[in-house]
Every structure is written in structure tokens, then in C-alpha cells.
Amino acid sequence: MFYGRKRSDKAERNCLHLYACVAIFSRPVHHRQDAFLFNHRTMSLLNTLISQSLPYVPKAIVGRVSQRYIAGETLADAVRVVRSLNAKGFMATLDLLGEDITERASARAMRDDCIAMFECIKQERLNSNVSIKPSQLGLRIEDELCLTNVRDIVEAARVRNNFVRIDMEDSSTTSATLEMYRRLRGEGYDNVGVVIQAYLRRSEADVRSLVDMKANIRICKGIYIEPPDIAFQDRDEIRRSFVLLLQMMIEGGCYVGIATHDEYLVEKSFDLISQYKLQPHQYAFQMLLGVREQLRDDIRKRGHLLRIYVPYGREWYAYSLRRLKENPEIAGYIVKAMLTKGR
Image (cartoon, rainbow, N blue to C red):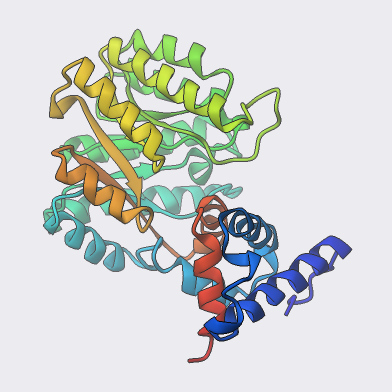
């Protein structure tokens, strides 16, 4: 079960508890009608337990659950998914998975793959742009190497009348990523945008500087694990920061990509959109493939543009673990996959 990993006592306990939960779910309904497992509090605890146990869940199970979040391993898979989303009225952003590249040749190969995505988007007439991660393009190797690769991608997008979103990664990359964005804008590229993470304490100061250049910004909560001195830990603090930063961006005349699956923040965003009488060309909601699809559809039905983040590629495992850990419905998906294994 553990694929040769060295187990800590805590990890072993978590896995035993996880499989005990599976056993409970496996029992006929009439044996579990009175179980604590099905009240809200216990389901929340189960979500946490399974999240902590994910590294010890068989990779095949993670793969089965992750199919809803990943378009596939190839660009052709991603094209198929984007075409389907476009037909339903959604825009897309393609993301070739992979990060923390430490070899120059691999970073250049990733650059070439990203450029090929823009040509494919053009040929297939898709309504999609591309998101890139600095660490997949050489940021861990050398800042200038990364900037050169990103510049090549942004130029390839420009000549095809398309757009590049530079994703934000963990806090060790924030300053370098923002500096790269500023340099590209200073060189005259206006078809590039950046991301602000609401949980970072520094983000208010960053937004103030970005507003001055009318930056194109995606705002999200933030997903990487950061210490309390760098990032807010409390959900309400993060929500307050999100709303404050979004308002600052709107008042500063920035285009905003409102990236959230939190219904509270969606409603707060609706309020700000109404208050400032934003037009469709000034903002769009953004969501991940496979997450909160009912909420996604409701936002679109209310007349708002919505862009869906469509990841693909062979490096799906690390991305999947992060997404499953943040997904509040994780318990149901994991347990269901384990119960149906081999069927």
C-alpha cells in the first residue's frame, strides 16, 4: 500500500483510519443511519483526515479522482475539453503542468511547448489564453533565463492576438515574478497579466504598485502553505483581504480576473460589480476545471463572463494532490473511488 515509503506512526494511523472510513461507507445503508460520520462536523473531520492521508493513497486512486480536474496528458486532450467548454459559453486558459524545473534545456523545452499552445489555439479557433508558471521556465535556475523564456512566450502570444497569464507560486517567487511582469510591461507588452494571492500579507502593497500601471490582475485566495508571518491563516481574514484587494483593483481601473469558488466571495464580487457598474470587458470570473460546477453554471447564467482553468500534461500528480487537499468534497470523491476500485 505504501510503495516503499518510510511511514511515520502518524501516517500509519491516518491510513488505518482512512480505510476504516472506507469500511463504514461500504456497509449497507441500514447499518449507518445513526453513525456520526454523516453529520456535518464529522464529515469535515473526515475531509481533513483524508487530506492528510493523500500521499499514502495509491496513485491510481488519485488519478481516478483527478480526472475531473485534469483535461488529460496531451494538448489534444486539452483542445477537446476547451472546445466543449467554449460550446457552453465559457472561455478557457490552458495550463501545461510542471514546475520547479532545474535544467536549462527542460526550461527551454517548456517554453517551446507553451508557444506551440498558442499556434494550436489559433488553428483550432479556440476561445482560450495560456497560463504559465515562472518556475517551469527557469526561475529556479536564473532570473534572466526565465525572463527570456517568458518574453518569447508573450511575444508569440502577441503576434497571434492572444494573452499570457503569469501564475503566482509560493512566496519565495513573488518578488521575482512581479519584477518580471513590470519589466515586460516596461518593454511595451500589454498582453500579459499577473496574479495576486489574497492570503499574503504583502499583497495590499503589491496591489497599490500594480494599480499605478493599470495591471491586468487575477486575484485568488492562495493555495501554497505559508507561515503566519507571511500569510493570513484565518478564513475570515483571507476573505476580508480578498474583498479589499478586489475593490482596490476595481477603483484603480485594472482588469480583474476574479478567481474563487467561495460563494461568499462570489456574492461580494457581485456587489462590487454592481456598485461600480463594471462592464463585461472589465472583469471575468475564473474557476478551475471540475470544481463547483453548479456555482460555475449559476455565475454564467447571471450573465457574467467566466474563464475556466484547464490543466493538462504528464506532471498531473503534484497538481492533483494540491487541488484535492483544498477541495471540500474530497472525502466523497476519494472514498467513492476506493469503493469502486476494480469494478
